[in-house]
Image (cartoon, rainbow, N blue to C red):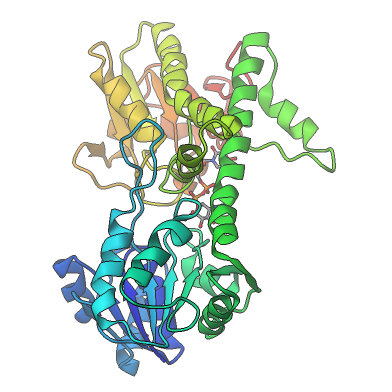
Length: 416
Ligand code: SAJ
């Protein structure tokens, strides 16, 4: 089997290398020349545990090479970005997917399998990808086999999850589904769940939407409890003792390139029917402003000025700041001239980020925890000695114990 992957990002690259290490001759295609050159020289251009070693193994076996242009293969996997458009409902931008299809068509041959892994809006395969391939003269399910197989891996654990997660394989016809499942059986040890393309599209989107809606519920609970003088975190703990309840955790908002993006693909296709999904997005998007106003009250209580932000990434122990609510909070506070805002994040090396913890805390009136990095969980009370007012507002509820001279605020006692 020969594979050509189009898109060498967080999904395309690990997937390509995985196939290569399972004996498949693999060509990885990307438009970024710098990335292609780096990979051909044996160095990965993204961060992911275990990926560098896996690339070296694939190169040694002579099974992987990167290129700027697609070439003839038995299987094509498309793993390109699908961002939101700046329109009213933030619909899916299909441009990169269609460009990948158009670049592939000249080298496509009868018998080939074409797989789209990118997260796509419902009906994209039926309404856009299939017609484009038919226009090029192919009969789907006879000449070529067209499949949507959404990626479901968690950044930081991609190399493990690629093998052990269950995969949804959604073909345009049954023959397409069967061919797609054969491809992944090369290395997938999880279940290969066969369905049609539309169901696969919607299932992937609903996985992330389910999480987004539940987090919105938790964030709403935090706001309501704060208004009524109730400890929201204790409520969650109590309610979750019920065997059929699983309340999620409130935070500073929802970020990353999945939960903050995917629900809009559903909303924009059926805006009247997706009220809960839409409202949940609004609730989660309102959290940065909510955190800012709570932080301002805490600083003003002491006529303070300096706010130290702990964490800019969208979640803990990653370096990804895409759609990060922490970045939004930093930007809102930083624009206000009455505060001196310092960001501290051991995972982010942007120029404005303070790398020295003592400097970040020196004279500070408030520590605002926005990402749950392990480093923050391990801090002892002494670390905060240089602060002017020892106050911590922990939106991620990760600092467990502190002595009485540190005011510790989270969603459980914000109202006090
Ligand atoms: N968050 C909360 N409260 C919670 C849980 C999460 O505020 O109770 C926030 C996080 O801080 C973060 C955001 O939600 O800002 C998203 O984080 P996450 O860990 O839930 O998910 P992602 O975006 O890193 O990865 C998700 C995963 N999907 C699911 O778990 C259903 C992953 O499996 C998908 O492959 C990935 O999206 C994707 O690419 O779609």
